[in-house]
Amino acid sequence: MRLVGCLTFGGPASPAPLATCQYREGVEMTLYQGRHRLDVYAIDSGRLVKTLVIDGSSHGSCPPATLVRKGTTSTSQNTPPGDAEYTAALDQLINGPAVG
Image (cartoon, rainbow, N blue to C red; front, side):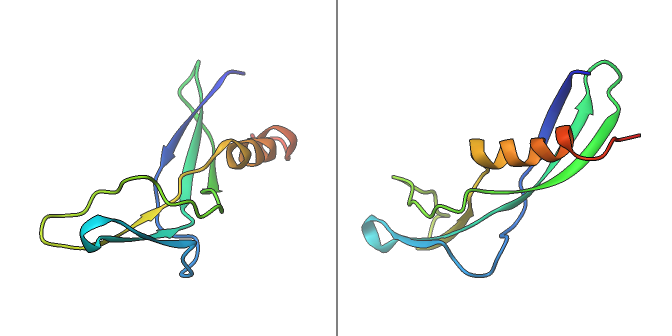
């Protein structure tokens, strides 16, 4: 069976921030570990096979730049999943109980 996944970005996995990032002109960005939804579909039929919860990276590394709305000086972002997080989530699907 060939599969494809669609990731829907969610909110923070925890209220505790991973990092607070400082940028020019007093801009501050708070980085949280993200928690997202991964819908896995069978390519041939388009049938939803399974929905998995997948956390973003737990490494709090400030990006080199961030976007803020005009007139504001603070924002927040949630980390996307990295290779390790995708591998762990898909391992549940491949090696877990059979899906009917």
